[in-house]
Length: 491
Image (cartoon, rainbow, N blue to C red; front, side, top):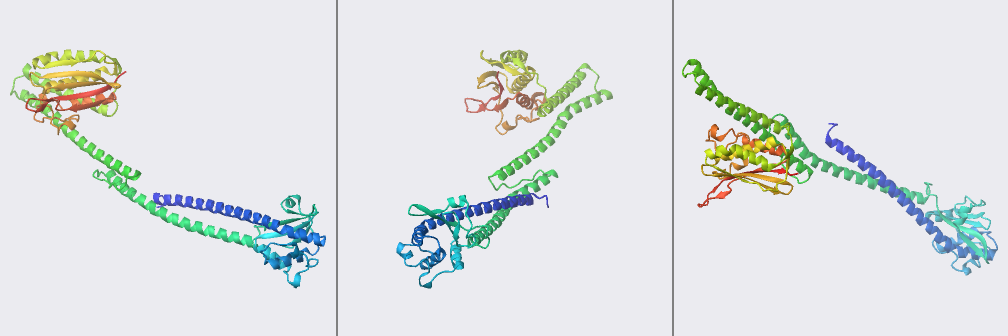
């Protein structure tokens, strides 16, 4: 179960979801922190710019920063912590040395709390950079660094700098600050969202994996059944994606296996049938000779010799087919003149054609390109095709061998004027031991291996072979004649 593809996919998907969730959570938290820090920084700068005029007025009227904390407290109280400090010089004036008017004011703790609620910290330094007011009450009397002073808002009176005002974001690393608490809540929300999204993604992924695994399980069961010898197994194709193509490929493979098994069984039966007849003839004649039923004469020996020749030819054809189908057929290729090859073949068939009163015509253009072929094997192809045509062409008929250039190849066709091949038989003429006319005797109809050998030899040369029937039509509209053609690559 641990090695199940489903669990491995779910485990891998879980790792991807977890890694993606961590990256998203970290990036979101970082972006939120940076955005919040940028916001508070710009907000502090805006506060400093708004507070600067009031503090400059306070310094000019009091000739120093004494009592500035009380001034800040009273002004914050009057503005509710949200108004602009020192909206006019008259506000600061009349409060008398920075004392809270009417005694109303905020204590240092309240002042610090108000700034903290806004995520800010107020620092006021004199002209030397010494802190004279700190909303957090931690740095009073300490000197600020030059980098910190460079971030502040200069306070000038009569053209001279009298102080530096900094309104800066609180330290976000301090967990007790409101800003840090805000970011903590944001991070918690991000984490909760990521967890929920991860769970939903995992559930959807599990559903998707189950949909993927369902056809794979069916396919696996069918494969197991075929491994046990049940070649009738097929899977239902319900999809058009890769799994659907895999199912169709499996069904095609199962069809091929079933057909191959049927062909193998048919081949064994055909071989046994083809061998049985000549062996039976030889056995019967030998037994008759041994029993003295027939005399031992040259004529009887000739019959036995013919049967042995038939057996030898059948065995040779079967061996040639098996070598070609296994890709073990050795081809001795060389540059060959096709016209010369066909003309030599015609000379060999000349006497047979005359005996059968069949005309053998050649149509071989002078500009045929040379071919890189095994001349002996292609001669065997032509010999089988012309011999087959001669066997089925009636007296007075015609056999025509023609060659034509086609793009990148040469097409050779052998056409006869015989009765033709029925359409139902045409797809099977290149199969072993197939005879379009089963009633023909072996002597006239052949063993049924000729065209099968033709296909294997042509395909071994990288060519293609085809059969067309009928090719002619008589005056009554009836079709007749057959053409077998093959193509070979040209040099």
